Length: 354
Image (cartoon, rainbow, N blue to C red; front, side, top):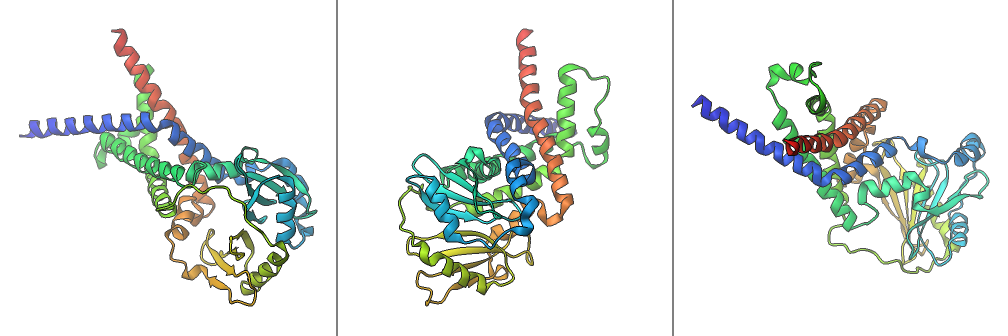
């Protein structure tokens, strides 16, 4: 009976290993994109253009109060035929005001100094590594199809990790011994041993990232939505500043994070709300007619799952240590996503030569 149970266990592990390998091979390119973009998002200061830092970060004490209408007008004047999409104010993630303009050729960005008000840089999303990483990591440049793919990748990655750990698991008493790589191993066997050991060591961080990533992808996915078309929107810039001022007065202790305009003339302004967490916002929607009451959603009253999950996924909930652990996890995953297919290929080549 014992021998039969052992045989069944070996067969189960063999099936799990096969599942682990095929998921890894199928999703390796997309998982690699997630690892690289996740690393960029963990290091926003390292991917800002040096010119921005020279012209803004050293002089932030002289930064002037932003005029949304002026920022939007400046950006629109630099992109012909574009439609205003969103204004990101300078702050924690950005040293400049960044205006996104949607156009038939793809989104364009205009970076504006918060000190001089002049244009610092402009171009496609690929000119702005942090913004490109943000779009790729969460929705692969597509609000619907890309977000769906990200959700599938997150789920597949979660299954990949579980299958890998289940295949390796030696029992609680043998974990430390199983992680060690014997010096006597050579060639492909040594590479496979390092793959197993690094995978086991990084499994907790990887499971955390995969599970929070899947939750985040499923909560921000635009269910029942379709790909938006770029369409012109009539913007009355003369009242945007008034609307923005009303919003700011309703959240006097908040720093504006971003601003959006809607076709009906109303605006939405998100203000940082660090009293709840690093990614929470107070949201104010001001109607086109300033005489109408504004709608205020305080961070404490926002029960959207992403408000809790996003700072967990980014590690910010755990302070500086969270970022260090996630960066180490990214390095380990980068090794795994390369060493796994390489070990599989070398093993197949060795078998084929016999």
